[in-house]
Length: 214
Ligand code: C5P
Image (cartoon, rainbow, N blue to C red; front, side):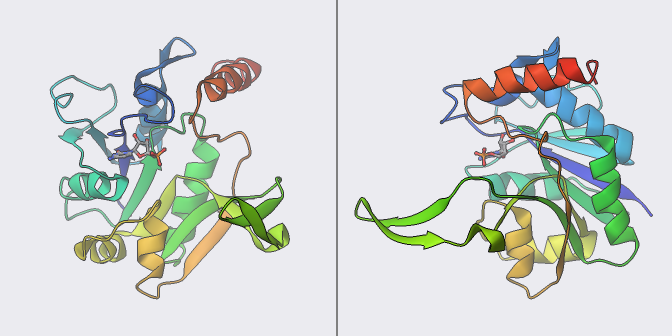
């Protein structure tokens, strides 16, 4: 079974203030950490970077392509560079540098064993409310909700079909769900945080030190 990874790193880091994927973490870049986990788990890695950055080398990348306006467009740019021989395609956010090899193995293993798609999820710890015009309209039962992470693994043909319509969503599973496919959920890792604001880098640095730099 041939697995390929698409690591999307073409965001502009609007909430962070600058492209967070190029920040330093444990003496490397956030992007390099995400790519090294991908290349340890897959036969090939496509890295999607901001337009204009696609001529700079990235260690562990087999192909580097320029991304698009949205995350979904960036995934599609990556998909176009994944060879037809790939059976499984895993999409991963460069902004999650702490995803462990075990998590990659879990989502890929689920698809190898027959799942159409597999994604990691963790329980939601905050209380969630729906707000309308600055007022609380509803408190949502968080027992039914999970927070979803990457890496997300898919049968290659299914992911290609999900993106063929050019849709937009905050993750790839949403596009696959829209086709009516069954998405398997595996236990995510609370440490697999997404670098969104500068404090996340501080936390990531501490987690990394705790696990001995790996
Ligand atoms: O913006 P968000 O935090 O959801 O981005 C998730 C991942 O998608 C990041 O790794 C970011 O670099 C990537 N992305 C992209 N192309 C975009 C927007 C986001 O590759 N146009």
